[in-house]
Amino acid sequence: MSNKICPLPWNHISIQHNGDYRMCCQCVYPPFGKPGMRVQDVDIDSVRNSELHKRVRSQMLAGEESAECKLCWDEEALGLKSKRVHMLTHYSIDKIQTAPIDGSIDVEEFPLQYVDIRFGNLCNLKCRTCGPPDSSLWYEDFVALNTPNKTEFDYYGTNKYQLENINNVWTLKHDDFIWYDDENFWTSFAKLIPYIDRLYLTGGEPWFNKAQWRLLELCVSMGYSKNILLEYNSNMTKIPDYAKGLWDQFKLIQVGCSIDAVGDLANYIRFPSKWEEVEANVRKIAEMNTMTAKFAPTISVFNVLGFLDLIDWLQFNRVYRLRPIPSFHILQGPDYQNLTVLPLETKKMIVERYEYWFSLADFREKLRPQLTPILDFMMSADNSHLLPKLKSNTQKLDSIRNQNIRDFLPWLADVLDKVEITADLQAVDMYW
Image 1: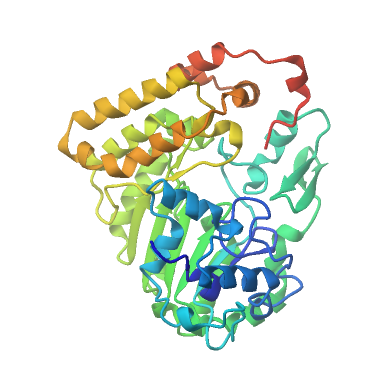
Image 2 (image 1 turned 90 degrees about the horizontal axis):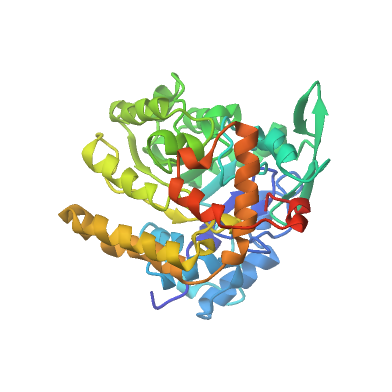
């Protein structure tokens, strides 16, 4: 792309699990695209002219790459289709190109069309690549995994939250993660619904949160649901019986199925899921008239090879309304779980496995341009110094969950067997 404009700073806002505003979910590097405001304190129209938003818009209009958008720039440099590029296929930038160069906007001239809402972190899984900011089920394992008596977790570098044990159950001491209980939010958000054409809903697990269903009912009752595309990320462990009746009232439902692998490996990564239940729910997609879906795996050290089996499953188990090609993203953090930590000889083995896989079928060879960026990212840096942290984390979590990585990933177990864990590492916070 020759220009540096993304439509999202003009027509989009994100609300995080704890009520923090964020410019976009792609802002995964400090300062995380946060304007320093919360939905509990500031209405959405006001935050859209924050100093952060104005600066980023001004930089884009000047053809500059803002630091907050680093992930999209990096993905595009690797040949991946970034969220920016994806959104350019949905929203015109003609009016944006003549917008004020200082980055300010008239919120009526640029109405909010696309909203990303995370109604807390309620979840029924505790995935290996996740943690307590995104999953309430992670609390107990977080305390057990980390250094003795560590009960405070960091939230995107801007907040710290304390866990407390009540009746032998670890829970959150703060109420930020139920920000949506404030009726003022619902009153103010209702005024925006006539202009919205896309809602992105994730969690936690969105289908477990009653506030998500309340939002859908509000859109239906106001008569605007047929104008709105619902975009989900779901772990597909349960589809509520009443969902279809509500979803049928919307323009389209697009589901990114957070599935990283198939069979036992899927259960290991996204614990304590059961592949048989997930697969059954995936097949239910064919019954949903307004739904389309795709697998949306996160590529990490745990599934870099299992990802190929996932693609094969999609090819040989065609499900109506389910896209046969997954839409993946490459894990950035925790840093010790991303592909760059693997030793060079292991990386070469993985490249050879991909090359062999490509050679076995025409449909696989056709995927080479889409999958090669995974290998390019893996080879782009050497972070093998983080292998002791990966080993320590994996061993501890296996012990907590009564699992053994060798039962699922013997090749990675062999890599970790050669890694020495020093005494000082035992005292390091093992989450992020």
